[in-house]
Image 1: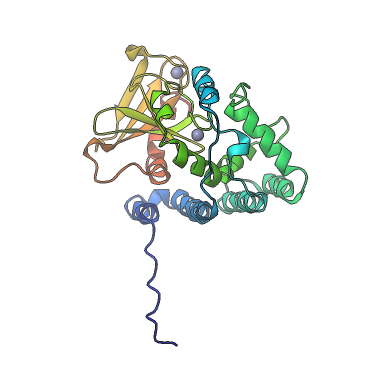
Image 2 (image 1 turned 120 degrees about the vertical axis):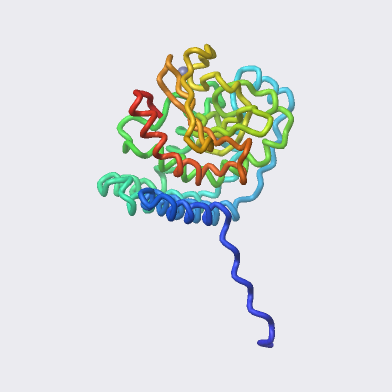
Length: 288
Ligand SMILES: [Zn+2]
Ligand SMILES: [Zn+2]
């Protein structure tokens, strides 16, 4: 019974390969790359276990949400298994701690939340309601007052494998093509990155669920300023990346220019490759 051929080694995912290559070409990013590899690896494992959600919302409700500029994923739509989420939340905090993105006191506070059987679930539900605006709350509210300062970041990363499944399903629906807001049509979060596609159109990419949607190339997604003279834009020397900075609200967004690129955008890779651009934008007085 032992004559079966050995199982072939599974090839490394493309984003891990690209991240490791980045470490060779830009050794100063090594620590940021290592943390990203750990996060991506963990999120991929979780996401492979998360079932695709089934959206049963009626078309009338969808239309009303769209008209009000509210996102489409309600908390109850998210295929969230609490045991799995608790583990993901804990592992995310551990990875951030390992790379000094969380100090030890804050890490302990966050891990204690995961351990307390009654604390985490209502906290996550309230946080999603407040930050998605799906029920009409102001989406600019973040973690509850008195919470550890990096709780937001841990929640965003830990929710991603579950919310990304929702985005996968919703992105195939026609409704998203008509969305014209600066926040995510699926989960209401802000864009974290953008891609300039071969037609020249700019698509924004959600910082929480990774959904993509089209948006005016020279409109600020954070304050809707569309005065071209008040958007400062600059590219890297190789033309691969671009920054759009708003001179009204002072926020900026980075983009991957896919028009002459050899691969599609990969946020997990491109966000790290462009860390020097963040420094350049901040030096000019803009905020991420
Ligand atoms: Zn989103
Ligand atoms: Zn702005």
